[in-house]
Image 1 (cartoon, rainbow over the protein chains, first blue to last red):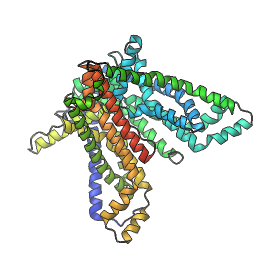
Image 2: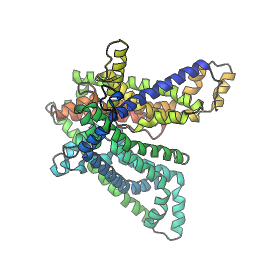
Image 3: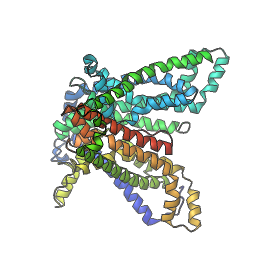
Image 4: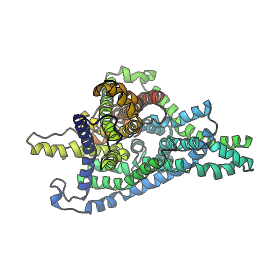
Length: 268
Length: 272
């Protein structure tokens, strides 16, 4: 107990009620969705029997979207690692007004709604048909949106572990800048890189605002397929599809939380 | 350190090129397209001069403000409760409350349909109680529920962290000096978590302003800014208006987040 004030029964009851209501508001629809995905007829309820048919149907209809989402998420991760980790070191090693400005511009896409970013990308590159039609177009949007998260996660760790002192030590022993980057900076930034990577993959797999505008009939991702199924499929199939999405996203989220708790002592 | 400087510049180059090609250039193009429509440069302020767009802007602002207020109120109660009490099942409760963090807007829209749609839980509940059929998923009220659903876990995480850091001794001191419970809440507790309220409130507001997935799932007929931009672009092929409205929307969300960051430090970002 770290209660500041002696418990007050009425206050306690009110707070408990609000907490339980909030939890019900969040969890009851999710529970209904999971149940509906396994129920023969949602209209008649669970008494109509349980089945795996809807899941099977979803895998049948939409496995392409699942594969594409995983591929795009991994591609986005690869690009954000390549672009983000070296740049995070370059920005963090000598904080200046210029580096702050660069950081500001690079993180701007997070503050602008995905719809607006997608529109800008389409107006600028929609004419390049091969690019527009390929999954690379979606990947570009995802990198734009997730890069700031990778940058911030790595920069926060680099600021916390005082990597400069370590680097100077390595330099005095004759290590070249590139050697220092790979053998001192990257190992010490491991925590931030992993946290950033989990974040990037989670965001990419669930991204809809940009993707809906950037996709083509041949490049549908999982969330795009979900929107399709919500609009045109029976509730059981939409629910089963949502369930597949949960199965993919929840482990990532749990990893992110467990990991965040483990490292939150060192970084902010 | 000279060679390290050179390496740093080399490392920044790909990032620069990417941001220039896929962010700065498209943004410039957006500005260009917005001003190149039949209305010329007047299109930039269409969000204020066109009565229909202005009404949509006002409706979106009001909705976002209501979502922010409701989310902050509920989250503050829950966060203080969870920070002050230790009981069996608390960890599970926290996990359940933060689990929807990763649900994108589309999925949240589906949650609202399951809750308040035609085959929804509230609909069957109200029918069985003889109260008629409660269906509000496909309206502004449904969108309100969806955005609260979306923002609640995010705001809660921030507020819980802030509430855990509050020093209980301050409240005890205020109490022993004769302050009532409400006075302690108003003068000690809430000011203590004010930066977190500011930061998470700004994120909730900006997200509600710009979110698209939830509105898209619920109905294309709700007049909020994101839906207007979408219909102008895809159905009416009115690129200039869509671009101008996007710029206005982006400016609003960016300004809100920048303002909050000034008050509350970094880590403020909108999410889709």
